[in-house]
Image 1 (cartoon, rainbow, N blue to C red):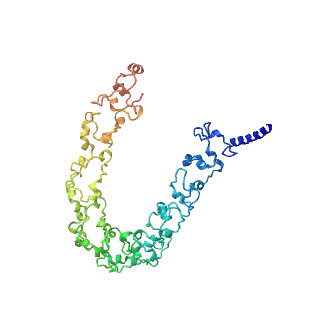
Image 2: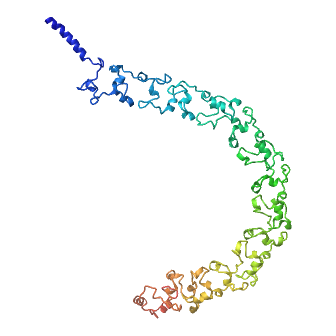
Image 3: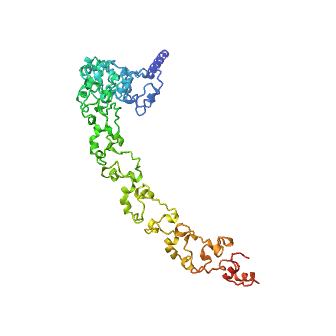
Length: 556
């Protein structure tokens, strides 16, 4: 019995050990409750807490929805595969890299960044290649098999190369490397980048088709001579007629590459085409189609202009037919100049027409006397009346050539016209009489003298010689009666100088300047004056008494 017990116990231990060993491997360190519960060994999603990010294969995208047994076939987790092709069938049949993530993401098998993926290949997708279907280049039996495609242009574009006729690539012997002429970034075949630097395709040369110049289909020996392409343009041109005029066939002598042959330039140095000469057509001057021996004489082209001009009439006036003696090349013949130095056309004389002075087309013997042109002005002037006043008919004695006859100057030295005398009109003083007008003030200023009341010049018997008190300032101010010091009482000198403002300070009766007052101006009062003059014979507190004793305004 004892021996039987010794045999049974080890056997039980072996069985128990087998029952408790983990199916995930002996060295699996993760706690069972991370994935399982007491309900059983089935994966309990409610208690599942294993962090797959701690492995080398995070569960993202569709991998998060796959059951564990799909990848972990024998439950020994560390033996699970982590390469794409170890789980996924290679539908591309080894024509691409085995790493699916090179093109795909865990979220979808669809590829949306093929352009970026192709950048890593020997053939980046540029221009029209970006929009091409994969199968257009990778022509395998299955659309998922990407057999190696050639990277040379002709590998895909041989049909395009052979079918092109403008220009015919085969006949012209063009390179099969499309990039020689066509940029890889282009979306279509036009807009070529052919190296045409030896004959620049600019301006008018930029638009034609290749076959417009390369008419024979040959490109290596096409002529660069203008005439080889433009013979038709040359022979059909009539203004001017290039053929009849024997113009050179080197178009560049006159033309640029601008479309339409304009602007055109010609060595016209012997007769510069400036201003008015720059507008006409060639045929306007070269009427006979002759370009080598045309006269440069003005009259040759402008005879009609010369004969048709009537202001002044060039023909009847015998004017020179050399137009440049008076005219420039400005359009319209203006401005025109003539040697008028004998009678300068300045100011008012610069505006009239020639015929205003040169009557009846007479230019050789027109009088320069003022009156010959200005008789009407002389006779119609009334302020002053030049005729009745006997004024000279030589206008320059008083007038310049300013328009409107103003300003005028006259020898008025005997009576200077200054200040207040400078503004009146002539007639204000010269009532039609200019030779014997009096220079006496009262002649013109009688009314001013009579109406003055402060002081009243008439009642006070003031002198009619205005200059005794007044200057020629307008308004009669300032006025000064300097004779007051010598004739009566010193107010411009002595102690009374600058002690008064107006005449009425002393002459309180404006109707009589013979009356005056002293006692109203001074600070003295009668008591003080009586005490001060005590013992003085003839003293009385009156202005007349003050003046009698103090005729010069002094205290003595």
